[in-house]
Image 1 (cartoon, helix red, strand yellow):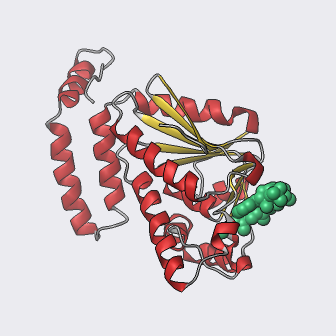
Image 2 (cartoon, rainbow, N blue to C red):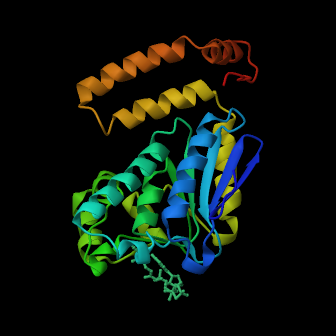
Length: 260
Ligand code: COA
């Protein structure tokens, strides 16, 4: 696969995907969205990959939003389709079945904030800035921002960000629960890789089942979510890795998980 806007590196079970349009602060254009879709689908199906780290090229931006040149050409009909297409890519990332860690190295604005929110976990550099500035362009967030932001940080604060367009810095994002942790810029990728390797060392089927169970918490009422949890818990009890994990504990040794 020849890529124009993404860099992909796979090492020891961890794939690092870098959105690479540094001259446009990694703004998402049609090519980068298409490539993101293709690459994420490929990494989902690649048994050599357990965890994915997603970051932006350069020191300034993770992703500074959707490409405003492309955005400016939309009308009512094409806008709705544009939104649905972007949502589908971000939904794919959220439900990939493998953890995707956003290593947010700078501006995560508009589609960049929405992309980070579709990831499983978010680590921010102390220089990162998160915002939904679409209101300044006369448009609303269209890649899931109006849905994921309130679920992550609460309706009041989400509305404040969406209605004012004002960004928040990394420390505030941490306080709001928008990110899992904040580290100095120079430590961002090492920290994301450490986290990725820690998760990659666990049982893959168990990680997959845990992702599916937690994902259903935002989609199902409590009772149905718990029914789903019981079903997935049962499935985890049927895995070879469950035998290995429990046996290893009882034999006082480290478990070795091999299932894909
Ligand atoms: N779409 C298209 N191009 C973008 C872009 C976007 N979302 N964000 C930045 N760029 C481009 C700029 O046009 C500029 O290109 P040029 O050098 O060819 O003129 C280049 O990236 C550098 O950006 P610049 O604005 O000069 O950097 P800055 O440091 O002064 O400001 C930002 C950084 C992020 C504050 C500013 O670029 C910005 O506000 N971007 C738009 C953010 C936004 O509204 N995102 C939501 C879109 S829905």
